[in-house]
Amino acid sequence: MRDQWSPVPAWRRYLRVGEAEEVLRQIIPGDPLRLRFLAAARITAAARVLDVDRVVLRAMVRISHGAALGGPPASERWLVEEMDQAIEDTVEAGALDLDAVGPFLKGLASGVGLESEALVRCCVAFNRRSHDERVAFWSLMLADEPLEEAARGHGVSPTELAQRSKRVLSAMLRAADGGGAI
Image 1 (cartoon, helix red, strand yellow):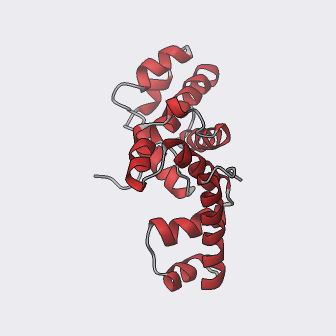
Image 2: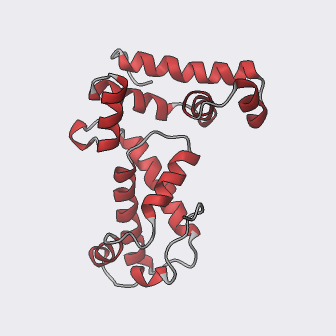
């Protein structure tokens, strides 16, 4: 299994078919652009907690419209940029539509003993924090890195890294209690 994203060879042919709907019909079956893999990698790199399926759908729509308007892009970088924008669009939209919460968040909610609504508020609160705070929390709480090692890796003191992580946790706890996602 490859650990670096790249679409299938000759990927541009999937984006040459004309209208956005036609492009979608080309890129959905079999995921020839490997957008699920790309979404997972970019979500992790951005230290976001999002449903990959929702991000992939947004990315497919963005890519199909972009290809229909401008033709196939010159480089794979365009696909990465469209994915990054799909991630930000998903964050801005929030995950507040509980009917649209995917299996990842539903499973996570039951696993941590929270109602789906509370978990969604926690995810929104997490995603609204600064990149530095999210990365600190991700490193310490999700990746389970030792504090000293994580602090060295991020170029900050252990105290600063712990404070960043604590700010995220505090925001998530307030959100879980219904105190808002800010």
